[in-house]
Image 1 (cartoon, rainbow, N blue to C red):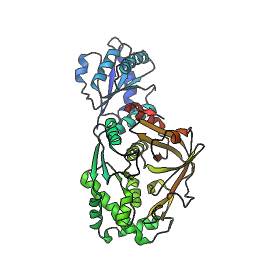
Image 2 (cartoon, rainbow, N blue to C red):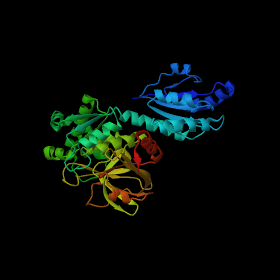
Image 3 (cartoon, rainbow, N blue to C red):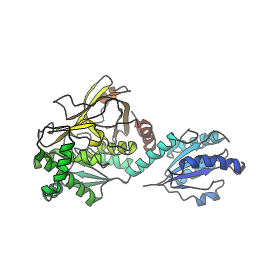
Image 4 (cartoon, one colour):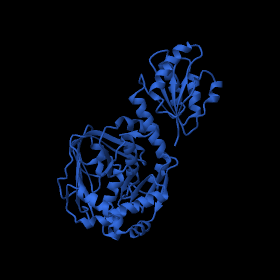
Length: 414
């Protein structure tokens, strides 16, 4: 993962005391969010002391006018450059001139207009750090993507993700390895987990013993995650149903509750989106089917949800198969929500913000957790320009962070 540096630049003509007073305002806010604050750069020679690499983010505090050339030179060193002007000393004019040079030459860069630096700048740093982490993500595929993911799987998807996240690694784990791990776990090892999950449910429509195999899958997945050093996983879950006569829904619910990103069906764009949204929101993400769209409302449904996201949950069977354990989660109504999906093929980041209109499972003809959300957006593109079925929800507004992610990655925003 790259590092974040605050690099102040200034003309040597300006009053040093006045320049330092402004710099102190940057440092006061940003010192806890950067790896190092460099001394003020006022000449080419000073750049010899700036140890920035192509993996790093340079936050350039443009302290004065006359620092345009130094700003451009800093960008030659860094992987990404964000210009942070302030309100005086011709800081913004210098930033605009330098930024025009950077954009015209195709150098990855942003200009963030906020003084004093606060929410916008901190959100930008957070967004860049998440992108940087994704660029070295070790993503486990437990089984290949499901065959019905005709758009969301294949060479084009994997190549597209690797173009966006240069060192992302796909680790393929055969499902037989999972089955073998499950077979090695004695019932006694999950007995306390069974009791905790069963007692924690509002109601259960499955017998207590039905939790044993799903919880063995949970422990088996944890073993695989540890053995391979994985940062996230997605699983070909319907094959698990055929082999073990149970589901992975509960195991994924528990993993996501613990902060480990685990997606369904081998959908790579969806699990990458889950990771992105989860880390930006510092909370678990919910991946689901777009079950219906009407007006500005969307019904998103799936048979697993992080228990941490629910105000209560019921244990039911898996919707399609009637086997195993599915989670019917109750999501607090009125909650803020962001719905998002990354498409590596069209290089699009589609997202919208709204509120939860209903978080109660109302239909026996959908997956068990059902969230009806009301979005502040025109939703016709969801249908007319589909980029896949699975979308991701987090229950807060991360739209500003997602805009910065799109900016850093050069994605279209939809």
